[in-house]
Image (cartoon, rainbow, N blue to C red; front, top):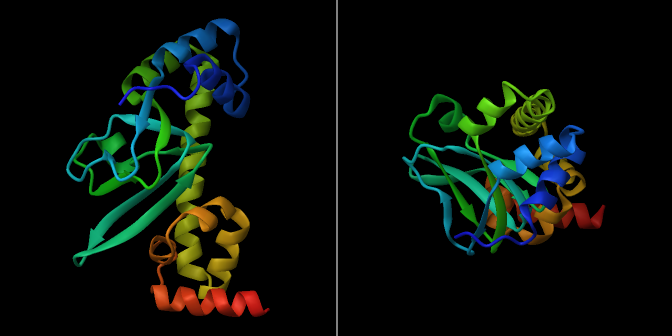
Length: 198
């Protein structure tokens, strides 16, 4: 499973630039936490019933998070290169996950163990800021998705995902995009056709 796409130090620097400006010493500390993973297409990163221990940084690839509702798979998240993802409820409640995270492409992922990150954050202010900003981003994205499916029309949902997540629209199978937008594949097909005509 372990096979870094790029050195963990470069990932630590990337996370520092994005979430919190850190000193060289703090980057060293963050680098020591990072676990590189190469996950093959079709593999599960987190299985149903498994307790999540990690926050993941997806350097390259495409992942899907889904859960079961009335025997059907419901997509709760689609993420591509540069995304942070996690199973929030399982991670923070330390409870068995009700969702599955799978690789839709071969993925280069860098995992941050939550407990170790929290321990380090207690003593290192800029890592504490990084941790808080990562969680803020995850919560904002979850809320944005909830609002999207509650308040937007099918056409507006599709337009928004095209604007905000163009790589997902290009790379994810349509059946998963439809599930993520809480519409049937047939509805998505009609919406896409009418959007192309507009």
